[in-house]
Length: 287
Image (cartoon, rainbow, N blue to C red; front, side, top):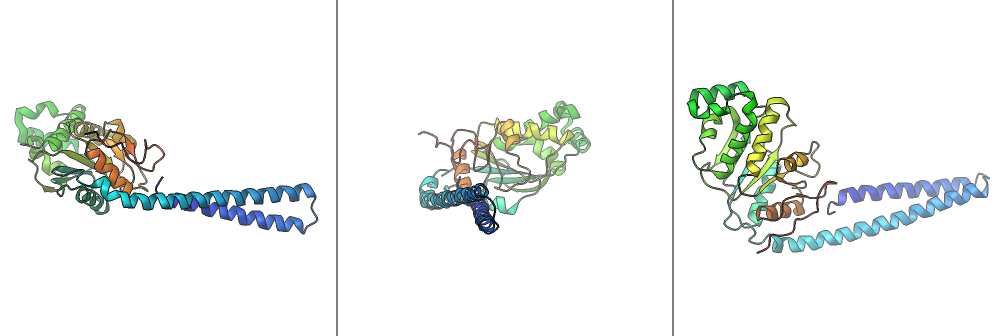
């Protein structure tokens, strides 16, 4: 793991245990307690000393590994995404920090700035969506009308976002669904980055998002859900369940590298420093 914060915290805990062990040992030595208790305290102190030494060695090794990756990062990223067009989809409001990390990833990997960025307004108002489909879409969108069709609607919208072109559903429902939009909606893209900034949804919106994620994942281009290391309500499992890859540490250099590799065609999976990650970095695509 490349995130030293957890290891530093563990190291602090070990040193605290070491100090407590020393104090206990000194206290017992001067209190007239029996030799068994004193031997036990000394053994605990020695164990704490050994644990502290191992933890310090581990942190030192991690620091060396991190520095080595910092040196390797430019070579890993060089030209990975040259001539690639990438779209960014926020479920909820745009997070400027994550958006900046995505922009840095694209720049470092040789891609142009995001072709389009859309922020989805959640929760979804199913009644307003149905009204817009009736009023603006006419007979051609009747198949998406009704709460039981929300997953199908989300799937179709996800595909439209990734494929580009005329995007008739987004044109029809933009006022009801989009809170922010920049870039070119028609241009084809070569990959999609998804960020969930809204809290987990239930009911109609949950069904809609299931379809949306599936549509993005099945559009024929790499689709990756991303979040920062300390995101409180992780969406990684949700992304993977709907067919997207996931990166859980976009605030780290390794996370940005993982995203670029996935957008370049590396095997799908969950990558980063989380407990459920398949690894820190995916294997680069061959060829």
